[in-house]
Image (tube, rainbow over all chains, first blue to last red; front, side, top):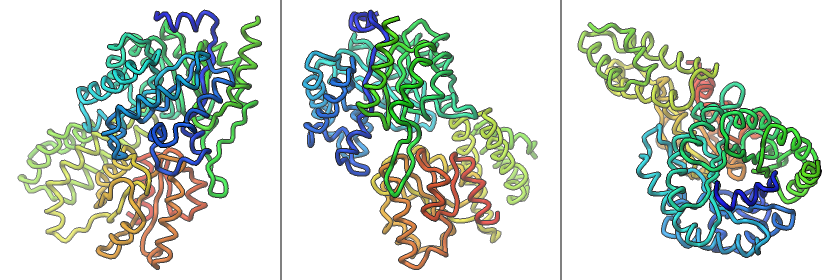
Length: 294
Length: 211
C-alpha cells in the first residue's frame, strides 16, 4: 500500500470531506454552470469550502475537479482550459489544506457511455491519463475516482491514474435495480470490489446514491469482497424541491447516527456527498472520535 | 421465410445484425410490415422492459435491444408510411436549458423509438423557445423533458409555463424524468407523466397517447 494511505490508515477511520458542488450552489453557482470553472473565476469561494472541511477535521480533502476531464469540459465549451482548471484546483486545495489535510484529486465520469458506443476505452484512457498527469504534476497526493455508474469506465480510469504511481481510490454509485444495490449497468458491490481490486485500486468505495441507510449493506458487501480499505461518501438523502428550492432532508445528526453502523460494516474512510457540508463532517467527527477511543 | 420468433429473440438479445437480416428476409418473403412490428418486435421490447422492471437486466441491455429494434424499424418504416400507417405518436425530446446530460435522455429516446414513436431529439441545453419553435412547424403529441441536475430541474416548470403562455399547452402531453425528478415534482409543475426509468417512460407515453 502507498505510504500516504498507510499513514492515514494508521489511525483509521479516516475522516473525509463533504460535498463541493452543492456547497458552491449555496455560494451562488448558477444552474448549469460548470462548478470546476469556479477554480478560475471564483477561486476564493472554492477555497472557502475546502477550508471549511479542513477546519471541520477532514483528513483528506478533494480538489474541485469532478467535471474537469477534457470530455466533460467539452460539454461546457471549456476543453481548451483543461490544464488551467486542474492546476488551479490543486493550488486552491493545497492552500486550504495548509498541511493539515491530504489533498486527493476528484476524478469524475466522462459523461459518455461505453455500452452505447459513444466512446472507446482508448478515448477514455487518453482523457483520464491527461487529467491525471496534470493533477500529479501539480502535487496531489492521490486520486479519488467518484460517482462512476459504469464499472468498465472506472477500471479504465484506475489503470490510467495508476500510471502516475499515486494511490487511487475507486468509488461507484449503487442506485439501480429493485433493491437499489447495483450500478446503473447492473454491477453488484461484490463484482465491483473484485474487479476494481484486480484493476489495482488502493481503496474501493461507494458514494452519492440514495441516502446513507442503504450504504450499510453495500459497505458490508464491498468489505467481504476485497482486502482493500473501504471508502464511503453518502448523500444527505435524495434532493427534494421545496418552494422552487432544492433541499436535502437528512440532517447532520441523522447522518451521524448511521456512522457507527458503517464502521461496523467495515468502512475505513467516511465522508459525505451531495447535500452534506462541514456541519455533517463535524457530526461524523464526533462519532469517529468516540470510536477511536475504544 | 425466416422463423420469425428468431427476430424477437434477436431484439431481446440486442443482436442488431441478426435483427436487421431477419427483418429483411421477412419483408422479402412478403410478411406484412405491420404484423412484423406488432407481433414480433414490440413484444421483444416489452419482454426486455419486463426483465428490466424485475431487475433481471439493466441499462446496457435496454440500450442494445432498443438499438436492434431501431435498426429493424428503419427497414420497415418506409413501408408503413407508404401503406398510410402512422407512428404511435410524435415526441419532442430534450434535456432542459443549462443541463448538458444526455445519457438518460438518449436512452428514453431509443426506447420510445423502439416502441414505434417518431422521436425528434432536440439535444441538450434546450431553451423553451426552441420547443415552441418546433411546435409551430409540425404536429407533435408529446414533449419529453430530462434533467439530471437539481439546479436545472426548475427549467421543466419554465417549459410548461411557456407552453401555457403560447396557448399550446393543451395540444401536447408533457412527460418528465431524470435522477432528481420525482412524481411529486412532476405533479407540482403540472406535467402529465413521470417515470423514474426509461422503460417506465414508454408505458407512460403509450398511456398518454392511448396506444
